[in-house]
Length: 138
Image (cartoon, rainbow, N blue to C red):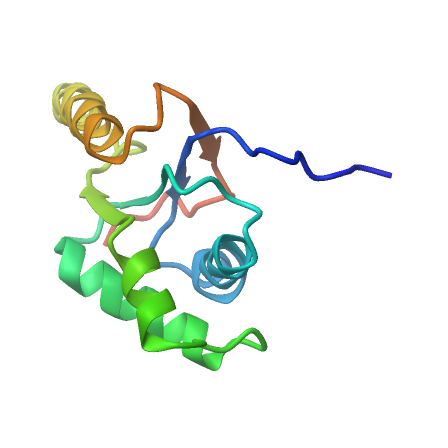
């Protein structure tokens, strides 16, 4: 049996395929549930990564819709706003054929993760969740 840590560490969770079914049906609602029930540290961030051009606001709206449809539900607006402040989105094609563009996207990812880590106070503690993604980017 795995026991939850009494004091979970500060963490930034980075998940690829942020616009896909796995993130919307499982990752985002579960992360919200863990956050609401104190299983995540207050110093927490969830970063969605995908090739689709989205803003942070559009990503947050998609996550909210996914959470509302989940069995966990949204809870209070105050709880949602607190969680929403910890959501970020990074656009990039990390699996494409164009090596030069891919390298630039990784540089942008690294820079943005440094910014998010500083903002969220997650102490350079990153957890990467990489569900299988399609190689098609269009």
